[in-house]
Length: 168
Image 1 (cartoon, rainbow, N blue to C red):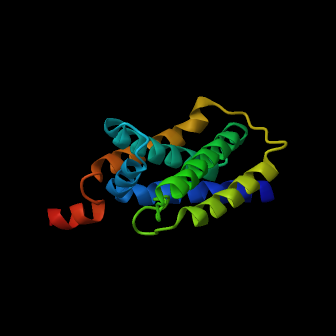
Image 2: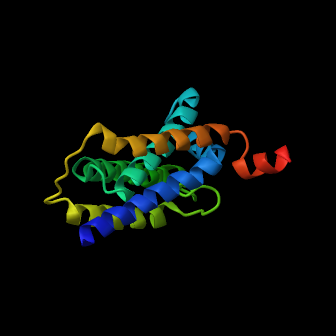
């Protein structure tokens, strides 16, 4: 029971992060460009890929599907983005990690603390995770990832809120 709650809590965190960035992925793209470690042409693709991954992991974890597969992947994903964010904080002195978009700015140290707690929660429940994972169990996550990627792709030039106002 507690393990399901912790998995779903981290799933909500990932989905929330992906959803917020989907509304204005241009902010996240600019942040990744400021890192100056990715080729410029790949930055939008990487940005949309990260957002889609957050949607996929978040929805799959909220539904408690394929937890024996998704929990380790989420731990690796959170570890990688935390290391990258802290490295850029140290090397480039970035003030906003971009983890929760423009609307909820957070410095990399705050984000690293949240991610460390999330990884700790997942690490504590990883033992004994057994689920029968079929391709059907992953469909909702991939549908969510597709929606996240579509929204993120539409918001690279202009945030979706502003796009909706402009269309009226």
